[in-house]
Image (cartoon, rainbow, N blue to C red; front, side, top):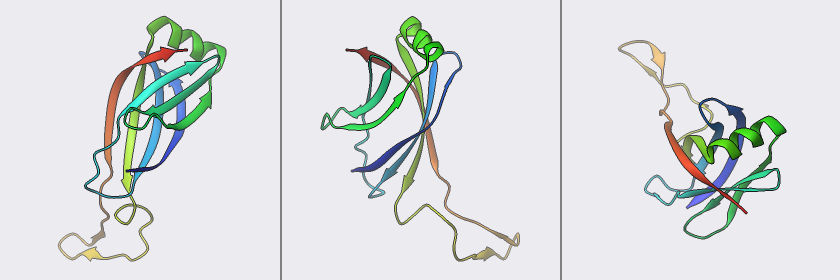
Length: 117
C-alpha cells in the first residue's frame, strides 16, 4: 500500500510536468494507480483503487493554461520503499571498486489524462 505521496516540483515541458515521490510500505506492493484531478486552481492526485486523495498542490496561471490546453499531465514518479531506501547510515564498501553502494530507486514516467471537475 502507498504510505505517502509528495509533490516535489511542478513545471511545464511538453505537458504540465509534475515530479512526485511515492513511498511504499512493502517491496511487493504494486497498488499505485494515480488519477489526476483539477478543481479550480488546485491539482490533486488520488488513488484509483480507494478514491482517496494522496497529494494536492496549487497551480499558477501559466500552469493552469498548459493543463487546460493539453488536458494531460506528465507524472515523473520516484519510488521508495520503507526499510530499503533512505539515508545510507552504514557504509559497506564493495571491495572490488572501493565505493559505498546503496539500493537504487526506481523511477517511472507516464502521461495521464486530467479530470476537470
